Length: 223
Image (tube, rainbow, N blue to C red; front, top):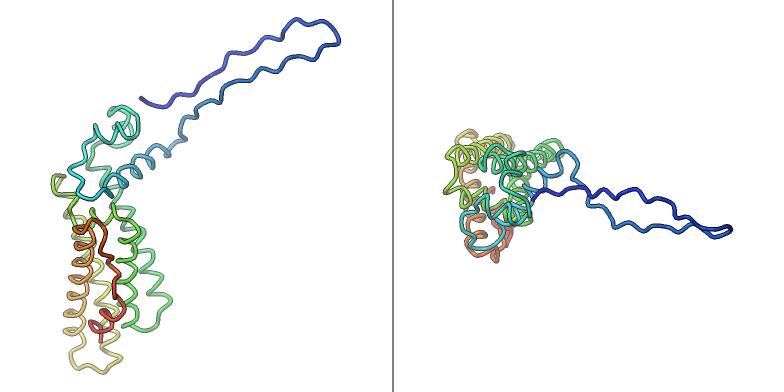
């Protein structure tokens, strides 16, 4: 059930003779109702934590509501559907990763170094957020609306496009005669490598780190 604020009844002053000190009434601490937006964040955080359980089966709204100790109806006051909840997680992934990627592009002059760092931040994000990893690789979306998987595909397409830009600059720096071809091939390989690492992380029950021996592997791929 939804959290409700407890309202203590006013305490009437006791009739006492002078010079007695008035008694102080001790009220039980009131349970606070979440501020606007807080419940929405709580729902997404709880969903992400549930996804972190290795081998977790499809998460139902009933299970999510039980975890939050609210009714299913309470969930739907904040999200129109479970698909919208997953979209909230995907928005968090997009915002987090692409904010870091844009910072790399602004601060790192070397195209090759940009590409390596882009892949590194993606895998580091996945390692720190196991539940989000299951969303990125699609494990958590198998039984959900197809638009969610399509949106994650778009996420990796966008990432590959940004890698191509960095790698095209790197190919130009090397004096390649086919910079576009080189950039396209390496960008595709880097995305496949990153997705493979994330898949292994999820399928191992989050035991195999996606950043394991990452630096030498990236150096070989981007060389």
